[in-house]
Length: 487
Image (cartoon, rainbow, N blue to C red; front, side, top):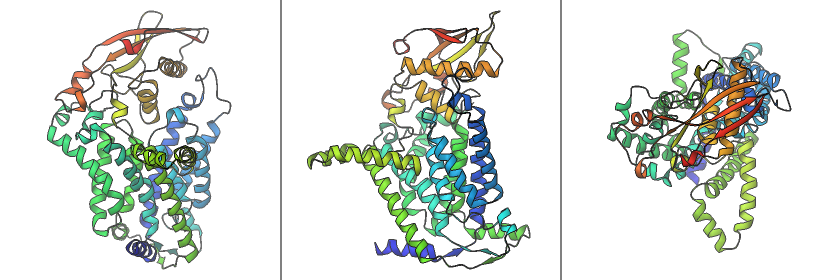
């Protein structure tokens, strides 16, 4: 305990250049801008019960434009503190509204956007620093580590327990299997990568170990650069393989905080930029508040990890033995709901068995014109891969809400209605009278999640089967659809 206190005290007392924080602010806020732009582009799909035909109760266009302008203020560092507060409010309002389109990065945005309010991110490389009549100050190194601890370390730590309860990860196939499902993988002409059993097993186990040790070791001075390089390569790999580019770039932006401030100082000297910096002292009250905040964060994380991960089976067994399981369940649910929406502290069971056990159908939709021409909607390619629409939130919605290990006909038809209505308006297709074919590609499930050579290409070559039709008549949808699970 004394050692932890000493580390915490040293982090506060060590004064470093704020340049790295400003670089992080610029890169992270740029990624966030494109995330909000993506939400704006698909706002009718996200928020309208039926896109364009049954509008949402509130027009979200102007608020989303306001959010984009706010992120641009953060990028250039104008009225940084106010922009960070407004940005966090927008985050709470919109991210909590995207339940059907929620995906992993949303929780990280929530956590980091909360922290931005308190971090000295506008000390340099900002309009604010140019406008104020004082020198920029050195900042405590703890400000570099808070986003890494909450936005990466705790996320990895929690996800590790899901992975340790997953046959797929324990078999060393936690990287290989998701990359071998056609609608999850972007790999093109790279079957040879997946066919290297040693490489796939190594990456699977290495990722598991790295995610577990990160939160305990990332603060170590000697490990910061190696951890940055590993994390950067890991997320470049995610960018290459999976249709979640802004997730990859968003976490990469946080990893920039691992780069020693000396590196940024040398970069600025090379370009002959010499920001004037003076030492500062962090008030004791601020240190105490930060310590209390970390205590609250750890309490929420403990609740999430113990009660919502695979550890739940053991913790609830203990609660039951002392007769408090009912009370704990109610309290833990309230705490998780609060922490996930306001601080981004949530269960991180991503790419585990429950996502892929029994996942054996892919869905595509084709528009049939009056003269019989067929046009594929940009949600699924002919080989089963993600279409133009499908990245980030849209990918999560199509792959795990509309589709999934056990397909719900209701959720599937609701999703088809939303995508066809959105696509039709964007392509000036009247829904007074329009026909869409619905096709299914039946794919295999790996036996016991074990590695197989040529698996991805074999699934891509599976044939499509006609599953039914959707006829829009006078802007009303009418389905003729087989039971997908029986196909």
